[in-house]
Length: 251
Image 1 (tube, helix red, strand yellow):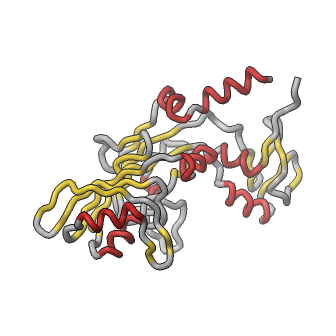
Image 2 (cartoon, helix red, strand yellow):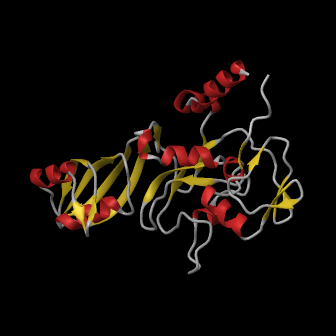
Image 3 (cartoon, one colour):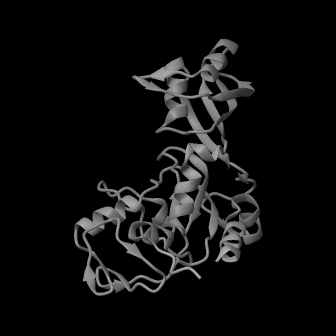
């Protein structure tokens, strides 16, 4: 027999889709979180499934089964909960029927395409890590006509404004007039990396559409539409159901 399974409070809140681990740490420091009737001050506080957790005096429900959605983010939206400048965010546009969600990574204000949403902060964090090895694939329209040498430079890795970019694979699809459409793939997307890399080479990007994030595809999803990923697909692609089953067998 083993005792109750414990986890850090920040991880529990993240799994419950309440906030990220970093946000949880800030909330703890601000005295917003209590466990079993006592305000806590340490992000390393351990809790169990039986712990009575409150945020701002409101009870926190037990983590729900992990869910994942595909969302076609249009341009002109930020991937944040609140913007000090009052600009619109994806959470202003998402259907009210959705539970509290968080995005897996981000797309910048001027970019569009596939954005994954989840109710599980731990899954979001896991899918964002470079170690996951998932390829992010985009279609990019740039001004000008990149050469084979330009594409080779992207593959070797560029340093832009002192920041080292990793391998970027780019292939030309079509060239029409002054513009070129390319398919661009990378495994670790830093802030505005594709735009900055092409700008550095002299080919500013005027449109950027993410069409795939790992095994998940944008497909024919309409702009601003949301579609849930079936649970069997999550089990196949993420493997978390098998891991949970293995843990049950060991206890």
